[in-house]
Image (cartoon, rainbow, N blue to C red; front, top):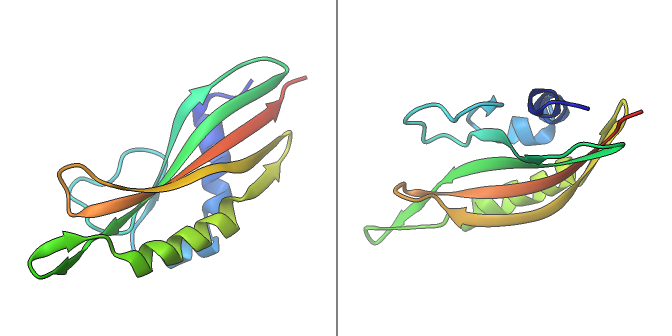
Length: 131
């Protein structure tokens, strides 16, 4: 069975150096987002981690995108979110390694509470074969 940390490592290593990491102007992290950041950061977190012969875990890969200001109001940066959504799908649609594979389960774009930005939530289904 893999721990949350080991699963994050697998996803991190898949993204590291990829077109997705190169496309953003922020950091790739397996922990919290840097305090006060308004960059396009990629943050990996574990939602659920099961056990058994076929271990299933759900992993979030969130990408933060600063809003545009139009007429004094914030609104989603459609073009940037669209571009990063497309790249995310290309990089995260499927992946595999020693004893594991993952697929992109769902992708959504949502506002960040209390901040002038949105985030792209890539929910991944990760499966590990435990023998």
